[in-house]
Length: 340
Image 1 (tube, rainbow, N blue to C red):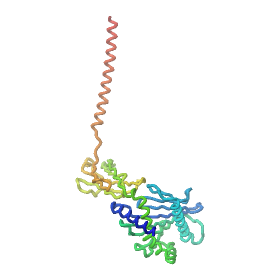
Image 2: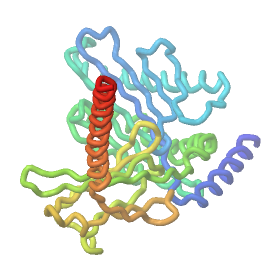
Image 3: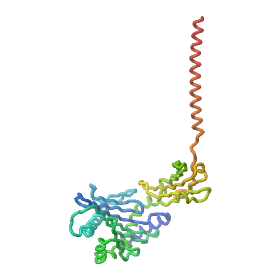
Image 4: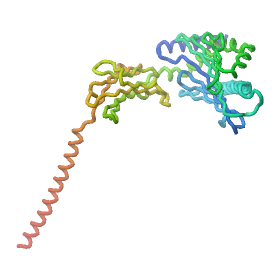
């Protein structure tokens, strides 16, 4: 009864938070990676948990702690029992992948024969109302073979001969229905709990800092690159216009990418003829901005530099004149003294 009440409270908290911030985080992803190569006494296991684009939990079998670690940017308020439970669950995932490795790679013997990687990725997407929207489960072997649950979580999609035996085993053990139930139920509960802990951080808005870089190309044309930095959330619109119209030719736009500090960055570049830079403007729109930004490249001022140079020259001439005058004055006084 208490568990159901807690889930209802979390659901209400998350629903209110997300609906007030339509670009909120709606996904929870778990990633298990097992690495094996010659000379390694036992495979290395790595676990990562992500809430949207933000890592919240990590584990590395080669670390000293051998425990699940808090990786979220917000304060860890969980008690030691929680992390003990997390560690046990992660170690179960490690054992599961080690068994898969033996069956898929070491069919004839139990020795390491080369470099192998198994990756298991699973998780759920959640609607703004706090309900299940989509589930993901896929296992990849050496980036060549994989098995995954279909969109409706009812069937297995397989590519590669080695994973065929895994599919047959998972069918026999009803692994598919078990994971379908988990993704639609328990995974959503885990999302609600994690999101409630970090909602203040995840629903923040950091406006982008924007600037334009001017660079001369070998063909004497100009590249204008518009940078947007340090923004959150990741959704942003970055476009170039020529004389007020959207520019599509000679345009390069990179995907939004994480900056490594919890924010994102993006740039868009356009190639223009020298002397026509003034006709182009960069337009940026983001939730953190009170209104869209329009920015042009502004040539660096030359007058202050010339004025400074002239002032330096005049100052040097004036100083020289003063020194010459003082020397002449001293000589004049010397002659007058000698004549008297």
